[in-house]
Image (tube, rainbow, N blue to C red; front, side, top):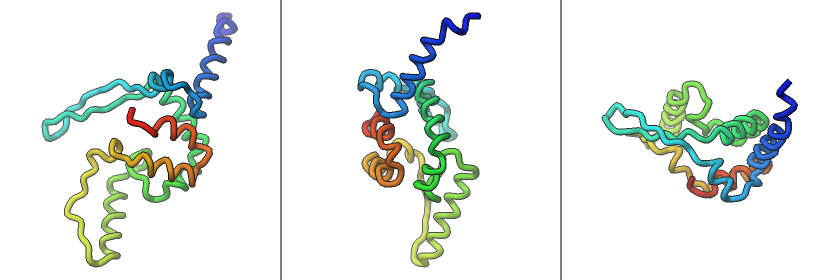
Length: 149
């Protein structure tokens, strides 16, 4: 059976992924782990939407961390998280913005542009919120999001 021959590699891979999940990876290795493959898709207006597809290691670790910490992440983000793993996110966002305007009584929204919402996140605010709401995730978030990748 060939499986016993790959046990050492499996253990080594698990150790690397564990270090990546804990935010304990040297900068050089982190650069490789966080790198993404760029893909271009056509926009309706004729432009190009650039998408980055993260490495397999990054996706595996992110999915595992999300699976283990999903309740904490959901509680910390509250109803203000849109666009990631949420059904009908645009409709929910529209309703939230409309309710806010209606409650205020003296405001109106003419348009809402979310074209760069994920690339323009305030990293310092993200790190502070994680530090206060989910301190267990501070290592990975600080290492993965403290700088532009």
